[in-house]
Image (cartoon, rainbow, N blue to C red; front, side, top):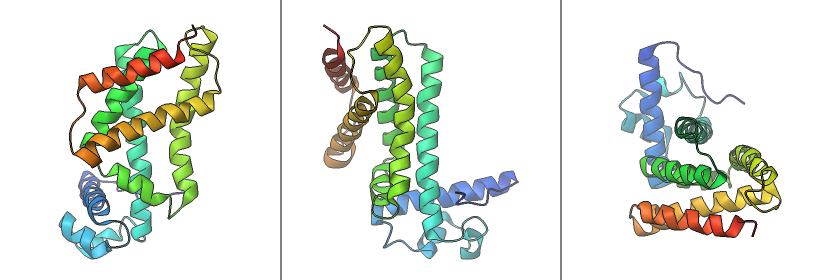
Length: 199
């Protein structure tokens, strides 16, 4: 489903970016239900009518944001894996954890937006995580076939790993307002390595 009318000019792209950044900030700070379109346009510095050139309503910009943030995160993880060419599943997991935590630091509102969507459109919420799971499953199956990690249900394991990343980030960025350092990633990856080792 399309939630946005994408612009055809650089100027339009800049305006859409302003609207999305303003909406991301307000949805994260104030929540979906207490944020109005007028709040978004005021924060973005555009006219209210301009908003409707891109989105039919507030729900559309919310769901577009969720889809867009998820797509950008998956792209960043994939690109980092291509550039670094890891040789093992554990190295892949280190990249996933590092890129995910870095992304959340830059887009801390992703927590609020994703979890609010559970109460607005459960299918969108489900799809968000299933898209990440699909990429994980391929890597898990390859690692199992090569004998690197133990045989477990790949789908279940993908959600376990996603959950670990989610709650480590939640603990640091939302609860404690701290930034996880390399030592945190080292501990997370060591835990995964020990838990999945075949012996």
